Image (cartoon, rainbow, N blue to C red; front, side, top):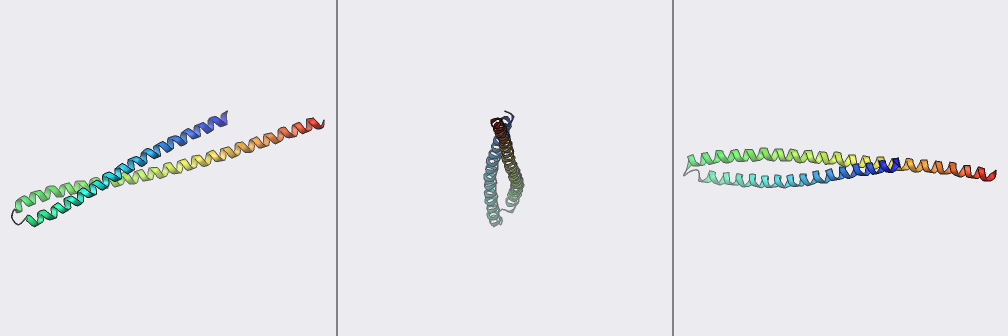
Length: 137
């Protein structure tokens, strides 16, 4: 019937939303791990930069060249970290939107079910009245 077809369509939509939500959540988790690795890498590189500053007395030119290279790496990693954080934030916002959509879909399904049950009750009462009228005649 149309109602059961509507219910199946709504359930399919709900399942699709849930699958997208799960996939987005897994992607966000992976991006968070990548961000943590980048932060550790930045911390390691910053430690290395400090160490190189201590040895610069004996080889200042070598130090300057390595420092510049590592500072570029740190900057690149910090920029990448910013992009990863933005992507994580975007995924979180998408998950929130999908979660709200799933809640709205479920609420709509419940409202439609209540309306259908109400319609069945009214039809059932009309049928019962008709049967009683026939019985009385």
